[in-house]
Length: 422
Image (cartoon, rainbow, N blue to C red; front, top):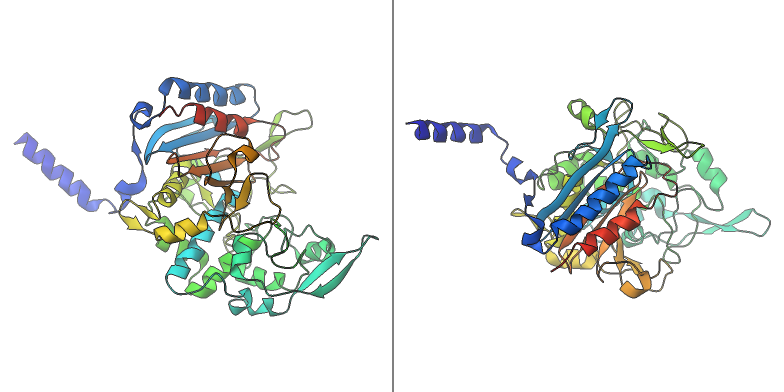
């Protein structure tokens, strides 16, 4: 009778749980089950704890996934030093430019739905880009303007559109237009309106000429809205994040989750950790809790957890599918993870795919990994990579801006790969 009542209780609970909830977490395995060494991973633990003990980093979360299973997930230090809140494995971080891979994936989903083609001109979706200008610098420090060539969606995906973060020859006009750096969370206008205004500003180069990091994926966020007929946050939530079980990934933090939001720290004049200001040049804590909640920055606006982002990476490693949910076809993932910039100068041993960097020559890069590995990072001192050859995904999240000379990311990579033994 007791066993029968227990079964009935379990069934009743299951009926009231969200259907997708069990897919929120990847399966955990012992490192040895998936070709890693527990003893060697302890070196990673000691090293990451050392950065906290030396007060170089307030806190961090690291996750290592191999063969689709979590081999390592640990939190270090504090989520908030002053409040004495310890970091949690499910603490929520500002992932900044790690947003780019997610919105690039949204563009590829729309291509698969027949809503767009990445070879399309940007002006087809945002007409304000029909007539653009490029600022050409002169030796006297001033610049001339020339007519811009058509920008394609593929230029935006690969950061070869010629659009920077407003740091080029016409910086004065970008300053006056309110476009500097990557931060949008405090803007009280929809992202589509911001991007339409941006089209009138002079760009830094002609499309296809140079790799220039900038507002490219923010522009693509506006394209997602135009092509789908949905606000960017709604498209991502309903088409990508919820289907993948990424329930802690948002543009603006729900009030019920604010107790898990990690505080941003930076380097003070003496090199010690100091709580970042609420506003200022480095965006401080940002308006992710109390802001207007109107501007969805596809290039740098998302908040997430290490586990959520690991699920996203595992979907890509699986060829576009996770837990029975298919987001992309394997052929699309293959296209995304190839070098698309050809001979355009980028980084030694690396090219750029559709949303992230791609390793093309391991020796030329000079750090552990594999050819075909893809990854990127965020402005608040976070990083990720996925290695298809090793079926390995790594996410490392901190909130440190400016970060200064801390070398935790280089050691993270070395210590992850030295723990791979099979």
